[in-house]
Image (tube, rainbow, N blue to C red; front, side, top):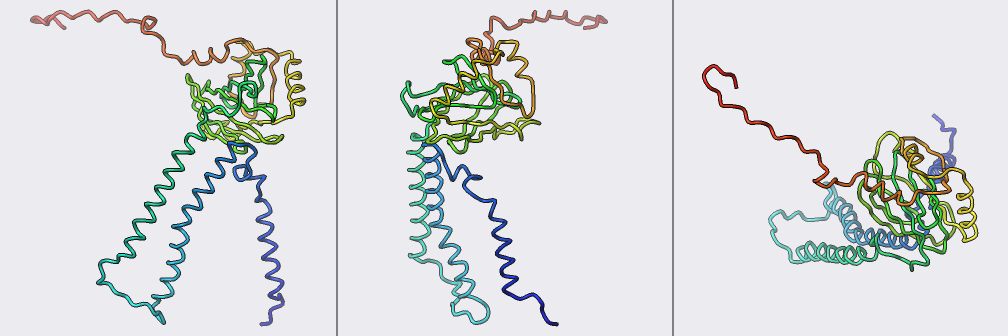
Length: 308
């Protein structure tokens, strides 16, 4: 039967389909590979370094697998099978020295980068740092600017020329805070605080999210980290202060109720010490304030027919 579809046509269709499949792949959809901050750049470099070190083992293994298949094939193979050998100095050297060198190298990287990428380590001077208190809720993020007296929900704004020092806690179950384009991942836990220091090298809007499953609204618990010019940040602060809604105790209690897909919201005033109050909700009470039960009276001994 004659074929009416030529081979070049089939090849062209195949290549076009492959290009269409790969069209959705890019640095924009992979912020880890396209970092926008100094911390994220260090993390990407460490990831690539570890990847290439592991290729030292992976590439020779794949090469030898195909070489052995060809050399020792049943028909036409030229390799000689010797099942009685028990020792090869050359093989022993490769088997033990290469893994040992890889382990030592990876250990050195882990040791040095553990200090370089310490999330508590400040990356700028105090005057070049914006301090933000972060509270994880169901299912949204609250950002409090204690020095500015304002707050926002699901939007973290900061000037591009300054670092951001985050102090995190949770008013619900454990959450995991991550902005892939800026680097860093750290847990937010009720009654505890953790810290994370980040910075952006360029203006832009970067997606952040909770990476720790926390219930029904977990899949929609996103927020935007917005790096702005100093003038844009001043305008953002002015807009927040112009809002008529303060973040008082009552307003916070309403905000803390579970919501899914919560819109960006701004508060013109924040109750002083609100972050500390959230922490105290989960603090252990002193023993003197714990309720004491009266001791149980001792029952009389059983005598004769008297019930105990």
